[in-house]
Amino acid sequence: MTCRPGFSTFAGRVALARQSVLSGASADAFDACFKMFDGEMVAAALMRAAEKDAALADAMPKYFDMELLQEIHARHASTDLEAAAAAIRRKEAAQSRARAKRWELEGDGQAALF
Image (cartoon, rainbow, N blue to C red; front, top):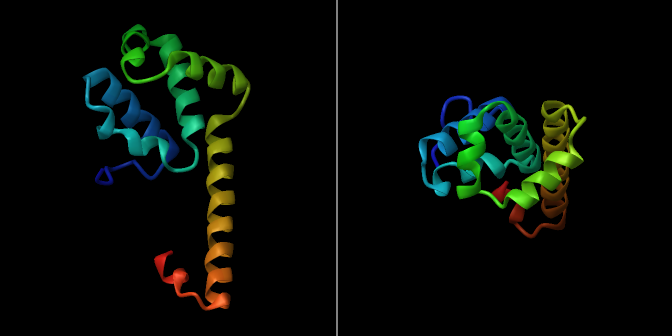
């Protein structure tokens, strides 16, 4: 998937996923919205949006395992999703930097991949 405007933000990924579901796009068209390590938060945000948007709620079963989404929604009922998503991405970025540094120090050449 090419990077669309707003895709780099949590709200942008939620909006793109919502728009894709409503438009009937292929799942491949928006699967990257869930691949920034905070996909569970994106899914929870979609469920919150679906509570207020009947068209979205009706379209979601075509793309998602609704039982799993209900579990995610319940798990994050009181979570500040945007803050949690940011914390997840920060943690993953720090771990990625540490792995790259470790590989660099070990001299296996893998650090060039990051």
